[in-house]
Image (cartoon, rainbow, N blue to C red; front, side, top):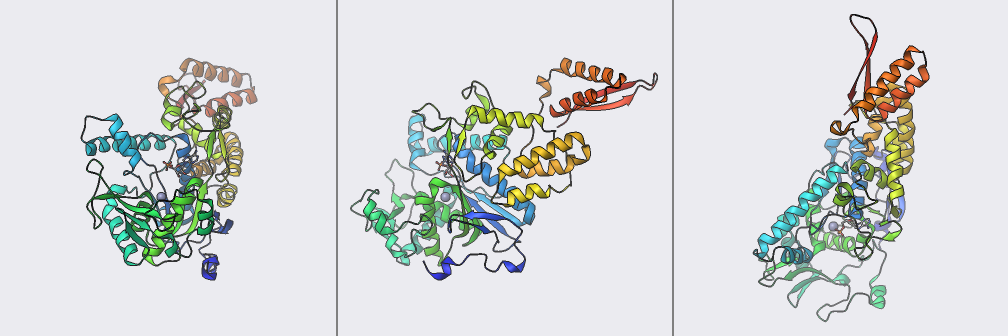
Length: 477
Ligand code: AMP
Ligand code: ZN
């Protein structure tokens, strides 16, 4: 690594663009001040799903974590100055296999389209219910094949790639800085020999940019024959298309550091002649379920859809708001154990929080302090809990509380009018009126707060004829 590479990317932060956000950068393994290349154009890319099957709750983690970061960047820099791209990988051998299995009677291209459309649609439904905003751009790999062919062509022309046995491969020895993100060097990789040595590869670590397709497999015409791209090249091309050759933040789960992100860096930097692809690389830790690695064979594999709509996890359905808060109750870099106990704890917290209001108020300083400290959502939830308690006592605090909750994207579970126990509400409203008559103010307030926590707002008034106090209620949305 050269001295220039080691220099922190934010050495020039005195230009006033540092807004207090610090993030742990996988490139340096340290917490750094976040300084965007331009604070009028803050750019983030996150690797999205491969759409062959419904997303599992582990896949939800990067989506939720980087949604919080997106919200925070929007707040710090202004939404119009932030661009967030998250791709959909819709060309992959797992997709082909699923299409053959599920739609054996259809031509493969139609079968593939069915699988990818259904899976991508479900993904959108699932993550919307987890409270995630839509990214600015959501490119699909199949929409960028031309760009991939062009980048591969450039890599061959520059001596970074070669053709062998119907594949185009990236020559990892052509890039001295290869391994800089994952801190692996090629000698270690050779010694480790965990990558199967294939005869046509010049080096064991070389990876596929393009491979030929059989007549049955999906393929696109290219200078190297009808074929399809490797996975890594997709993200290099889609990120450049939407964010440029060098951008600010690249995110994803820890498992992507090697080889996926390492290879994205190799392709982008070599093709574009840049030292960096992204200045900051952020990775979320892994999620396990009830203390064990999630796997189908262990019987602890859960899709987002199952958690939301089936009664397979803990014998009940879980609201999206609960799943989201439960996810944020652990710092994004730590491993997280998704358990029934955790979900119940999240639900208990949410049940105590008032419904947020539409507001122009600013979020609290304390919540900004927590989130700008490498997205400390654990501390942020504590702050929010405190604000919720204050807001329940003092309606003037509802604005600050609501703006703070919006940064985390969390809100209490909405009351569903069709499932409301109206007789219980009416009974408690009458009970409160009795308590008020008896001047038991504290008990009357307790009932009002209890209802508020359930999303029921009371309106006190006077009967025009009798002058007696009457109370109506409505569901706060
Ligand atoms: P995949 O579809 O496997 O490429 O994963 C999509 C995203 O989900 C990537 O950012 C992965 O790192 C992330 N991911 C997959 N499994 C888990 C898990 N168990 N915990 C946290 N993140 C995960
Ligand atoms: Zn990617």
